[in-house]
Image (cartoon, rainbow, N blue to C red):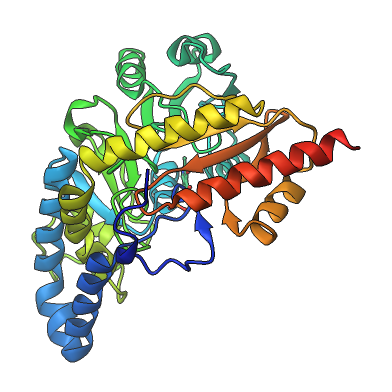
Length: 381
Ligand SMILES: Cc1ncc(COP(=O)(O)O)c(C=O)c1O
């Protein structure tokens, strides 16, 4: 099966980009939209920032929210998931005796955010172990205590590419009076979403990964019952009673941060259009079929595929041959011209592949060649 719409991307053709999960490639129709917004901004800066920006942002958010099944007043644009996670973590009032429950699949920067605050404020971060394929909710329930105040969980994990049952986790957390914070960095555009029906308290998701938006575009969704908890961490004109604005206070605090370039947010709807026009259904199943094929080939070479289900276009494999992850990563990049993440997770060497429609067969062949070569090198040690 072949790549499709490769011409939509500025990607360097000498390099195979198998890492859409870390940095999504943005298609030209979306970039053009962003450049048009930037042109407007530069043509009449005062008009744009003072008189038009707020209205443009609300309209863009309405279109993105429609796609995500979210209410516009429950959603704010943020530059990335990390910022949204920090915003929530800093807003919740926690202290000695309180526990925040994460798990061993969570993203490094998310752990860091909670660990730094835990040190400052005196609460504890607890990490549940969730064995691959295990019942994730049961593992969280086993690790929770009477002191658990917050549960933080990815919708789709980064290191292991697992789809976690966040709806069940949200329902359980609510029944126990625990705040649920869902890291949906990989979810928008990757899996069907209806944020209003998930039953969680806080949800943050990138538009700049799987929803094709330019870098610096994400959303923070907050359930109505938790919006009063959100603090103004960057105090800007949005909180000034002298300049009343139409947005809810919490949205203004999070979204309006003095002078900055909002073009990545404003191009969000173009990402939704691209998804609807070029990606949904046919191309998605084309990518999943190709991922299944490459998984079979890798399994024949001895790789152990981690649990996976459609429609994920990202899959992780345990590579059981002893190797230094950094060395294997470098070799795949330098010799085989591939951007593919290789790292250690729970003492297992993991190779993660993302299959978008722009990936060429020759790039997948180079991956098989590179890994097969590394296996031979290992056996020669
Ligand atoms: C699960 C997860 N959470 C958070 C992030 C952070 O995303 P960003 O760098 O856009 O803040 C990532 C990035 O890959 C991720 O995979």
